[in-house]
Length: 406
Image (cartoon, rainbow, N blue to C red; front, side, top):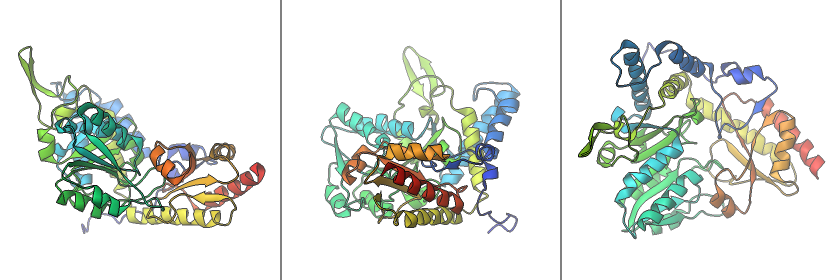
């Protein structure tokens, strides 16, 4: 351990988040959809726009050089966070675009009859791109089924692995229920069969393994806005040898070495995949978010959020007609609820009237909810700024709401 490094802090309070500080009555329980932004991230973006902003890579003047250094410095910062090389980091607009990039570029090597395994836990962003790819090339998307608890059916998964399996696409934590699949076993089995793997890290990147050498996935995608960074920025990690062999998926400036009407030579990865003006300020903001996160003990942070989840679900167990989806699985701090005597939308409106922000709907996970036998849920997801008092107020509001709707 570096003796010069200050000890890690435990948890950021509401005072770290200007929006929460300005609205002290608000209980924000939608961190799985997007995280609130700490002042450090807002300051970093504002400072970049007011002191160093210019377009990157081509300007010969000092301001452009500073902007380029900030942008490429952000790439290096993300690489350190992921324990990867800088040329393995592609900036995208978000996790969804990162997955679509892999489908469009790496996926062009697939042929009719090749198989893509996709778990039933997935967000639509890790289902639909593979369906579109399969429709183009004749590949087959095979869903990995779940057991009754809403966890991966491992026996079924091992049976699905076969000689035509080319890709496994799987989440690190399901956005609708928080379910964490046993990634170590699943990825190891895929590697043993020579299958390329993509992990959707949108929900897992804060708490779960984000060390690419330890995880062992070929591709890993996440969004900045769920990691306390800005919207409009995402990351695709791709194993270096794979990225170098992949063709570009969008054409334009930045991604070329030379262009003529006789032909075009493309840049090396990662620039090959970053056509046009990139999300420069957003990359700076994401780097600031990672610096901010590095001050904190994320293991303690997760224990705090899981303790709040346990407090919530213990209280819910005393209420009639409240059901927690996938309660018996290994989960991230997400609780997805449905009700015997009330519609989740109605419950959400009552909570909103009490300044409790929670998400309601299908959560872009219709196959998962269909497997669990519900059409929509009320989802409560925790952040480090949430407290036991928040949970107590939510439980009281839910009890009152369900009495009114009974």
